[in-house]
Length: 231
Image 1: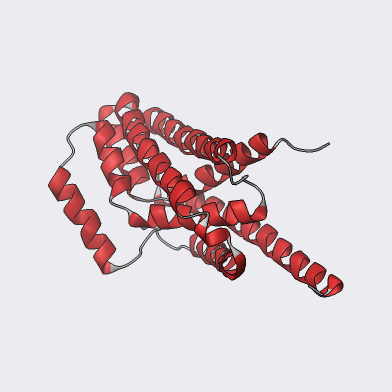
Image 2: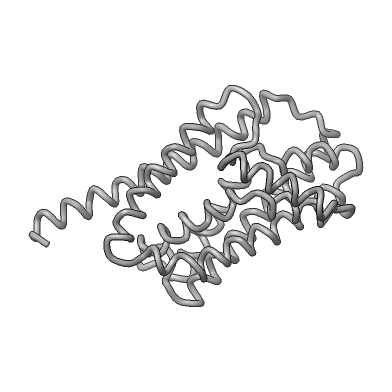
């Protein structure tokens, strides 16, 4: 029984969107704090804004960068880099001892995020979530790496139906997590202990490590096949 390419692309997007949304970062902390103060609807709108910007970054990654990184030696290098990147992220989240923003590129990126927040100064819940993700350039970097990896692995077909299916899956996974988090915050009145937040991060790290091991196994299989057939 073969899996439909559209279903596989959607599932790939859903799982990756979910796993990358769970680690405790600016959006999750904003939903926890603001949702506890202003209720489920406010937290949900923050999550909706964050999801829209996440999908925009994901769409840019698939349409503007993925094809370039899926050619020849660049593809091989990108596959290896993706494995190391997923392994690094997974270990970072699993070994985390305290709650902190998981995506950190550089001091310049941090200044950009701070400047963008001051410049736009969002007042609505939707724009708060939207700007928080827009200012985090690490999100775009994530999706450029993952988009190239997904296409090179054949999990997402390099055509519009496949790319859009994956982006749709990302929207469902990311939006679903923020919906669930907003609902849980409204039930628990924002009483999330640091231990609970760390468990969330550790769970995401385990998921990323599983993806890294699957990816690494595929690289080893391809190397063995290459050596066996001599090309």
